[in-house]
Amino acid sequence: MHDWANVAELVKPKSLQGGLVARSASGLPFLLRAGLEVAFVPPVLDVPRRGIVIEANDLGHDVYHVVFDSVDSIDAAEALAGCSCLVRRVDLPEGFDACEEDTIVGYAVIDEVLGDIGTVVEVIDNKAQRLISVDGAMGEVLVPFVDAIVLAIDDDAETVRTRVPRGLVEC
Image (cartoon, rainbow, N blue to C red):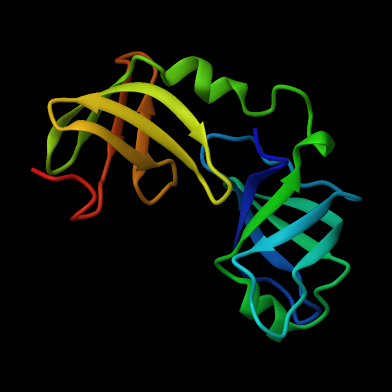
């Protein structure tokens, strides 16, 4: 297993002093808290690659205002918008990522365009992002476990609704 986990995405700048709006990575609770060291990926030129969370305040609607010690200007915040926040696994609560893996294995994956893709076999923890391994009529398909692609998880129907990018699956 990898030493770092993708726990949040930096959405946009929030303040002139470098604060950012952040949301949790798909399928996770919001895990950024004061004192936590974060690596920003992908790396961006002329801005810090790491920072310590100074504060993280809930703004409602699953978004947070986060301030890092190394991000002190609107320019740096703008450059980091769109980056992910990686945190050392040892600094996170035990089992922080177990819920999705435990619950969606065996769920049917239904795409908006392609229809039934198959069944979730495994959730793979990749350095950049988590992947859902799906087995079906099209063979094994690795679906990025990100909000733009995984649209909804219905626990009652045991389905994962997706919007798979063109070219990811051979029809």
